[in-house]
Structure formats: structure tokens, C-alpha cells
Length: 108
Image (cartoon, rainbow, N blue to C red; front, side):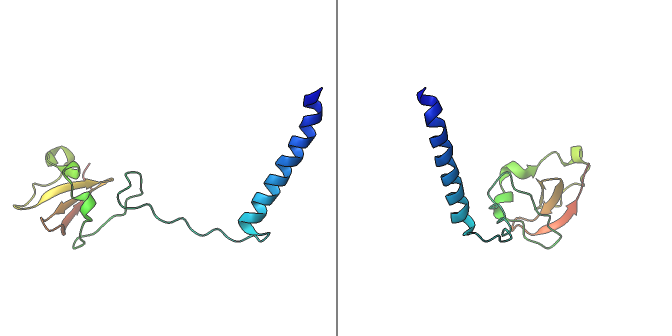
């Protein structure tokens, strides 16, 4: 019997909380949502941007985990002396020691 009496009270409380929460968020005004901020570069789940020749590859993509030693497997040309291939997303970049991109290759 107690549950039948408690149910209307719970519904009333839930309704009040929901209304006050929505009022506090927008104060009754509907505004267009601001675009989400991009994920930080260190996030492994971010959408990776593509760079072009002459750009400097961000330092977080110069770690050993991105270096491609078996460049033949990816149908990439041999890296020139002092450079190495780096794989980021679906792109491959021939990078100098200072991080400047020397060549962009799609590979296979």
C-alpha cells in the first residue's frame, strides 16, 4: 500500500528536478550549441589532420611508435639519408630529424 502513495510523490519530484535542470541549462532560451572543441593532440582517438610538404609534423607524432621501418611493405620509396617514414592515420610522411615533412606518400 505504501508504494501506491509514494509513486505520485516520486513522479512529482522527478518532474520538478527535470524542469529545474533544463531551466538552469538554458534559462528558458534556446541557443544554438557551440561547436565542440577539437581533441587535444595527445588524444589517441582524435581525428588526425593531414599535413603537406614543408609542414612541421607535431612532436607527438615523432615518437618511435609512428616510425615505419618496413617501408617496402607499404609500397613507399626508400627514405633518403637522415630521414624516416612516419605513419599517421592513413597517410605516410617522410620526415627530417627536425620534423619538417619532406614528402607525403599514401602507400598501400
